[in-house]
Amino acid sequence: MAQGRFITFEGGEGAGKSTQLKRLAARLEVGGREVVATREPGGSPGAESIRELVLKGAADRWSPVTETLLMYAARRDHVERVIRPAVGRGAWVVCDRFADSTRAYQGAAGGTDPGLIAALETFTLEETRPDLTLIFDLPVHVGLERAHARAGSEMRFESKGQAFHERLREGFLAIARGEPQRCAVIDATGSLEEVEARVWTAVEDRLLVHG
Ligand code: Z5A
Image (cartoon, rainbow, N blue to C red):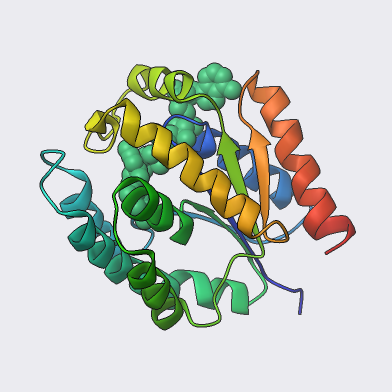
């Protein structure tokens, strides 16, 4: 049986993750692979119910610690019911946000104790870890302009202010520096085609040629 793979897309607001995830999924499918495209928070019926709770309402509806616990309740369900079974049968799972978003949003930007987040990661994820994480990086103001222009955007996190989003960007870059073997930083500026080419180069290099 073919080996399953797990790729996560991470970064700040409006970085282009969702757009590029669809493009990568289509490109991988052409190679005859089963591709499961999913997202967090959400990705399973139970986790989608938690998503409704966590993304709607005022910016201070939940404290960062409560948000962390809600994200991890959703993530456990998603991992158990969708990600682990798919990777186990040889599919390529591409996921729009995963555990690094909790480290960056609730941890680096929100101030939740990194020790709590690390303990939840160990307990909840067990051996299920991404083979490759693409960290989309671009200046905060460019990402927020793109996110605001997009129809149907969830506003709870987008409304948190410039300083929060600067801490977020640095939080993601610190994760990439700390785990260079898992993470590839993708320059998210430029055209859709330019960013798509950078994503494909990272996937080819890390998982198709040397994987
Ligand atoms: N969250 C958390 O706090 N903790 C966690 O553990 C997890 C999540 C898992 C999910 O929101 C929220 O949950 C998120 C973090 C928090 N915060 N917020 N808000 P969501 O699912 O509604 O959205 P998102 O994941 O934050 O998406 P996004 O960052 O706002 O967008 P994106 O996926 O990176 O970008 P996009 O939708 O592909 O593109 C945005 C717009 O820009 C769109 O109109 C595109 O057509 C346009 N775009 C994309 N690429 C380009 C280029 N290259 N040039 C010009 N325009 C472009």
